[in-house]
Length: 355
Ligand SMILES: *Cc1c(COP(=O)(O)O)cnc(C)c1O
Image 1 (cartoon, rainbow, N blue to C red):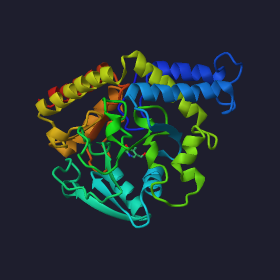
Image 2 (cartoon, rainbow, N blue to C red):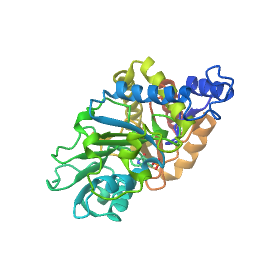
Image 3 (cartoon, protein in one colour):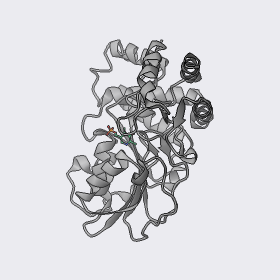
Image 4 (spheres, rainbow, N blue to C red):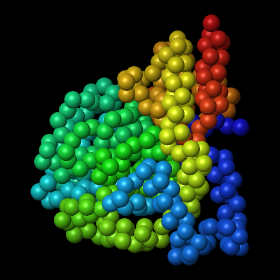
């Protein structure tokens, strides 16, 4: 058995893989594969409806929001957000906490005026900036709740009166959030919700056409909302597998239950990083992510040796992103405590080998 610590696409529950593989052969006893059914069929309409209902239920989405399943990943949202929310003469405020946040701001700049309210780029994004001002005349404020590459996470929504947009690609459904505090939430599915190919958008309906721009329909949130995420052929299989994964999460007790598990998993791993003299964490302690745990070695020359041992112990995907180096263990919802223990045991084994 492999322990998959990959950052995305990443681990999903084994049960989900089993059920998905069955549906590829015969979907719900229809005699057809999920890969060949019409997206307009009654069967698939039910899949979309249930997926939407599960998102609503698991995240307690209040009235007045639309739940959309789009394509183009979080990266398409970097463009769709300003196209829909930023008027010609408006200004958008962005918090710069890493590569994804920078990219989001860069795309918005192609569409309108952008103000970076704070950046942690001075220390390679190893912390979350605090005590910055968000201009009250901004059309919206954008931030990234979990910085997948740097292993930092924003646990408290920044206070502001302007509409707030958040990229939750890598921590959606990992902890409870108050959706009513946000105006638009987006997440590429491939980190905690499902396979690659579908993007979740939760948008407050009064945001439609806020920019006043004439948009191609494919980039217009309202067009997708009106069509029930069927403006064009949706990513049928990705939505279906997301539904299976959301069912799994619900059966486990939902977001509140998985949050408790995620807290324990992160604690076990950070405790070992802090205890083991060979390793050290890279993120500011108070901003440490519960989803992506980044760490390096005091002696970088030993890193290749640890990676080799990890490979022998069936630990997959722990090489750090090139902009941080060292290691990154992505410990999303589906990663079990026994996989965390396998990594911790390997770190101890490495320590013993070098006594
Ligand atoms: C992975 C990731 C992205 C990029 O997502 P795509 O679906 O590949 O466009 C954006 N933001 C965050 C926080 C991510 O983790």
